[in-house]
Image 1: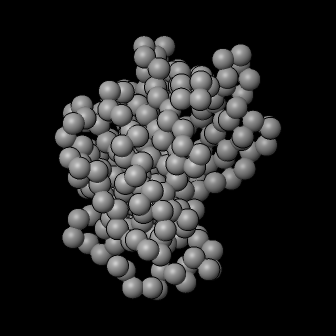
Image 2: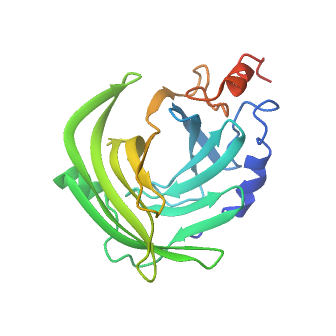
Length: 233
């Protein structure tokens, strides 16, 4: 919560064109440690910053039009803060959650329920309720072994009106203390669930081709896919 996210915005906006730039450069004092190409035309660059609390991690997401989202989690995978690029909105975790999300509890017991509040700089406040459960199933994606989870959550306004909710599966890596998207269903508040799959396809590490890329590779439309054949600058 202490670290201000606004100085990072110029870094992301500088990469807004996938044609003009192809490599993510983490902010000063930060180091990119992994790039994840996922379904749904998204690539995420994961990085850590020396000024943050131990265990904090950042993720910057790009689609075929450029950067659109970034977030910071803590060592328990709590959603500490996030930043939507267009329009720019910063959202933070409210202090003293009623039931904090706990990656440690999920690993130890196979279940973790949570209730916490979120506030953004537009003045909107919401409450999130949900839970994660280990299914006992392991999956191997691009040579990386992940554990599958089942989740269900809803986000409401302070009056209890459902704004959005989701259910489905995700994947975790116990040592990295990270969640990755999986096949799920999302409801934007109208009562209709729609399918969505942002599962990882490739895990790319420093020194490997495609590391720090800002150009998504999978499930993008034909026009943007053709741009991937251009030389990388």
